Length: 166
Image (cartoon, rainbow, N blue to C red; front, side):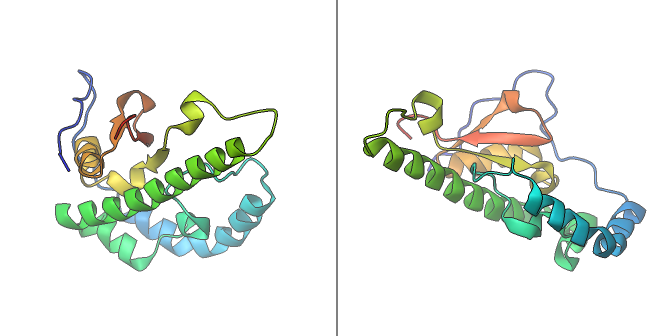
């Protein structure tokens, strides 16, 4: 696959983001075990959580594991690329599954059908996955897989989509 991707708009910082502070990470790692049960219950009771093609499965999105702690503190660019690549692969898989589910729904004889943008495979990648490589690194990883970054989506949660015909 090609690694060409549409360039970012002028003024958008696409480089690696600054590392998180050691005290902040240490506090998050130590205190997560106190708030994690409440967060899991809240997520379970929240009806707005849908299978929408995000790259974050289950409870893992709330936990700062020792390996992620080490990555956040002293990860190399290659380690960040592997981390972001795995998240991107999960997101792509979930985005394609969502589109397949919509197409199966359309195949049945229901009155309402999914159209247009709802049939374009897309996913979202949060900042915690591409912090060490930046948006430009994420765009290169997406381009290797035949996808593109939606530059208008912001920097906290980036939308990635597969262009029509890709």
